[in-house]
Structures are given as C-alpha cells and as structure tokens.
Image 1: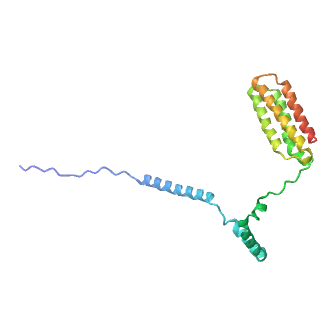
Image 2: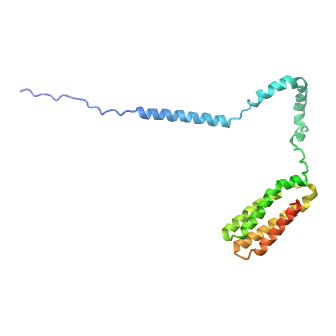
Image 3: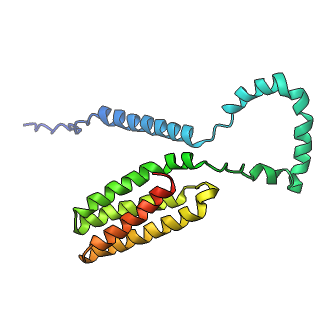
Amino acid sequence: MSEQKPEAVWVFPEEKKRGPRIALVVLLVVLALIVVAVVALFLIPRGDGPAPTASPTASDTATPTGSPTPSTSSTGAPTGAPTAPATTPPPVPDPSVDQFRAQVQPRLDDASTGLDMAQGQSGDTAVQIVDSLQNDAQNLAGQAPPASIAAAWGDGVNTYAAKLQALRSAFSSGADTSGALSDARTALGQLRTLVGL
C-alpha cells in the first residue's frame, strides 16, 4: 500500500482592511495643515496690506515734495532729535465741568443706587455690593477733572473711597452699618455737588 503524503497547505490569516485607518490619518494630516495655515495667517504680521493703499496716494501727491524730508529725517534719526517729538503725546485738553459731569454722572448715579441696595443687605451680599462701589470709586479717581475742581475732586474721591472701606469693614464684621452708610452717602453727596448734580 502506498501511503498518501500529507499535502502542505499554506494558511494565511485574513488581512485586515486598512482603508478607514489610512483615510483617518490623511484627514488628520489635512486638518493639521489647515490649522497651521490659519495660525500662520493670524500670527505673521501683514506689513504688505496697508502699504499698497498708502503708496498710490503718496506717489500721486507727496512723492516729489516728501522725498527730501524722509532723507533728512532718516539722517537725523540717529541723533534722537526727531524721535522725541514723535513720542510725546499731544496735551490732553482741559474738559469743562459740563463735559466732566457727563463722564462721571453714570458712576455717581450707580453709587447712589448701590448704597441704597447695600442698606437692605448684610453679610457677603453687602460686601460684594461695596466692592463694586469701590471699583467705581477707583474709576472716578482715574477720570481727569477740569483744573478748576481738580484738587477738590481728588480729595472728595479719596474721602469717599475711605468711607466705602469703613462701610465694607462694618459689613464684614457684622457691626452696625448705619453710621458708615451715612458717612459714605455724605461723601458721595459732596462729589455730586462738586460737579453740579
């Protein structure tokens, strides 16, 4: 009898489909390139944008008369003389009392309302209201008043801020706040009178 020899058969595992993975990798690479392009667009300064709009007007009108001036200013730039006037801001005009009143009236009105609100509150709620009033007082201190009331305004805002701090301390400690509220209202009233409110 002849024995049958076993036949060698190669069995390969079934290959996994890699199509979705490759598509995902390609998609991620494309998205990364788009993000890099957008970031580069916003981060790279665009010096070319304003120059073309300014150059036609400069070449039409100011080039013949303006060309000698830049050459002299460029030679004078190392000395430092032309740069000092260029960096000096123009003087701020002194506002009138009416203009100043229009600037500060909303905050002064808010302060009156805030003190009324704080009177009916206690604890953390009242402290938060006073904190807001203190922020407004800092804003009032930063306003440039007319020269005619500048000293009185500065003193008045400092007094009002000090009274607000005393009121905040009274609310924080749970003490009687009626005196501190009255003092803050008086200081606020002096500011309002100063600007004609």
